[in-house]
Length: 273
Ligand code: AMP
Image (cartoon, rainbow, N blue to C red):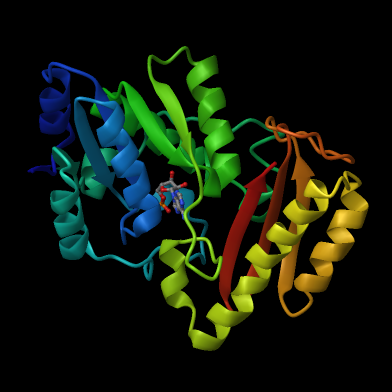
């Protein structure tokens, strides 16, 4: 597996590959959620490239940038074992200059839900993803449905900026008990891990109600709030695939999203219905 720290050298490598390139951008502390994206990228392409970069511009002041988990040696091993062709590990200086153009998230969709709680977060996400897609020369880039709003905004950016890459949405990988895998789960102690199961339980309860024919989001939300009673819920939202709010579930066009705090840790999860 080739390892690059320089954006110029990585781009030179990807540009000269003969065949399709599947790209998986990550912030590291890799878990099976990330690796499911890697496996899919490998299956569907001639080459698979991965980046690990904890992008500072998507963290707000006071968020967990400095303590965000970093496990570069273990991550490198995992990528090597998975058969990744090249790993891009840029430094901050490779990715940003002091004063440079940046991408702005849309004024509505970029500032609801996660963007409401974390204003400016998606400006940072879209800017770094734009850079990474350009450097990686990706044919297809793989993103998790776990970060639903991020995925939708990236799809919109690629479409509206006429970018030559296909965005592939990948299902959320969960622990056996239901908790969606996340690099941030390492912040949870055993008790908090147990408490956090209420999030996936509430989503599964929503799925069961829809399966039984209930489409009224107010009723579904009330049931979800019962499950979530012990947690500090930031939002429960029902929206369509374009992040428009829904009062009624529309099969194949609804996403149920939850954000809640367990102790000091913010967790997000969702199901696509
Ligand atoms: P991150 O390192 O958290 O920025 O995530 C990198 C990519 O992995 C993003 O596209 C995430 O949506 C995706 N991802 C993170 N957790 C999961 C999961 N549990 N299942 C599937 N994809 C995930």
